[in-house]
Image 1: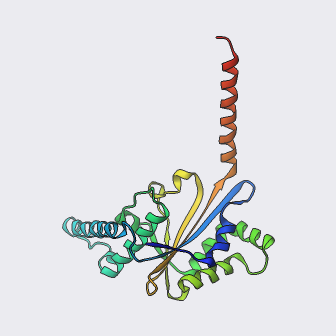
Image 2: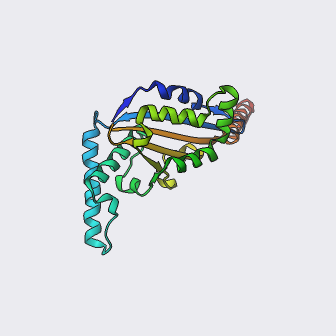
Image 3: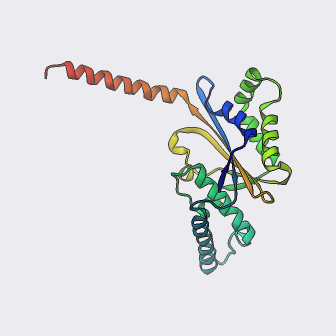
Length: 224
């Protein structure tokens, strides 16, 4: 997967980089990737494909029910490998399992994505309207995505894992979403991840650290 510089996404990334909303901070990031293998991608893609085939083999040997139909075709397996490779690039310190990741991918429509966006990014949308005006945040996002991956030809996937498979869980996010917009013809993927963090928790941790430092100073000055 090769990272692509896209000016259409830069304005959105600048706005969503660290949006302080008082008690909460919203962070968002859009990245575009070519599905051409780069670096260790080829070796990793072979490993992921082998993992999927091993899983299918074991499923057919041990389970009378047929394995997940979406993994049986080569095209579907290839799509899954691209999606997981993209996750590896987004979260390079996290070890993804193709089979486990598959359980958390859901195919979405623009309408279902819009519903989630409107629900969780309403404060960000208001801030965009107040500070930048003009075209709404969602419409600007639509235009940027359409410019990079042609939304009419896109498959949209949501990655919503459980806590054990969520790379953002350790970062203390209140909520987080990962969407991948995949254009099979262009062999291109745009990822959009957005999350929310509590400033109150962060401030509390900071206060605790200050108290600890203050206590250390007191005990250093005391004669024991």
